Length: 482
Image (cartoon, rainbow, N blue to C red):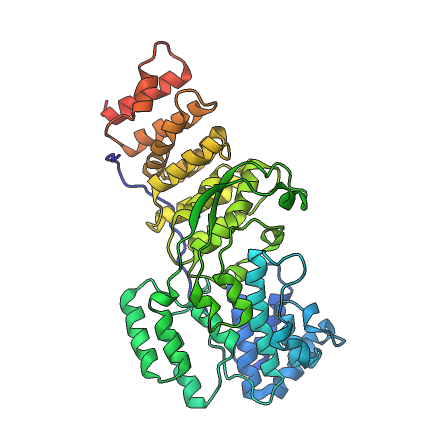
């Protein structure tokens, strides 16, 4: 159904930012690395610039870099340790200091830990691990890489295709061999939003005449397209969640299963192949609670798949006392790729979070998508209605989240969303009056006009002056322009 309404006036969303170049000189590279390793703000920008700086400085003057590292971070790695004991940039630092056995960096030792074989976040972590160990292994060799192919252009982790072509051109000129994990990560990061730019980059990649150029050209075509996730209503195995003391997670709920991507299971290294297999996110995973944007930057142009994996964790925040994974929603909203049904479903579950702290990130994500013109308000409304029918989303919690979004200026957007929800709640679902009141306020503020929904008209025609009836009449009057 279509209504006429004014445009929302939303708070501006900060755009994605280009990464600054890595600091030049060993002192700058080591200082940034030390700052990153000791900081609780685990940002994509600091992680990638530190990594890029270490690789470039090792290629320019390894001895100076190692001396500086030993002075600043030597105490962090006083003894030799296996690569499996080191996480993040510590693997690279320890490799430069020769504090890690070279054999432990070999690809065959990059595998999942016990108990996390189906964990989506563990899969992303494994890609990070493979990339970092490959870099560490190269740094211990006689021919370290001149620079990385996978360093992103943007702080989301996305990489411009034309920039990757330039790097491959430089590799060909220098006679450098791309690392399989480094190049695989570069492909996963390539931006595809502009068909013209992607086509030009594919043609330039083909002209390189290299295997990597051919793979990039194919990836920029249908081969690299993110696959849509598949919606279903499931009853998760209660034992899966009870193992992590998550009670009450066995009720039927909406889930999205990520689709199979054969291209990811072909020429990519083994640690990447799990990303191309179907998965619905129901695991004993604890990573969402300690996750970070760096992990999400493995797939910065496929937020739909990440949302499918995240959805069960967001649903926990709506159905149990578990804090769930709602805090990741604003970050996923800022990533690239289609903003499809799985992302809207995760947003819907987040808006129904049990606590204000769980709902707040979902409100922020809604505003981000609305400001970017990527929010499908009717789709979100239909998903909210479906989750309300399942009991995942409670009307009073949805009303509170909607009031917060409306206070930020999203009146027209919220009216369009709630118009799809009201038929599922009226006339008698507990808490429907709160949602109806927010809908009426949003319709008034947005100047919405159009046909009164049948469910609202039925309630408005009742006798009496209860709160529900009064709000239904108020909404009817707003839509009628009176």
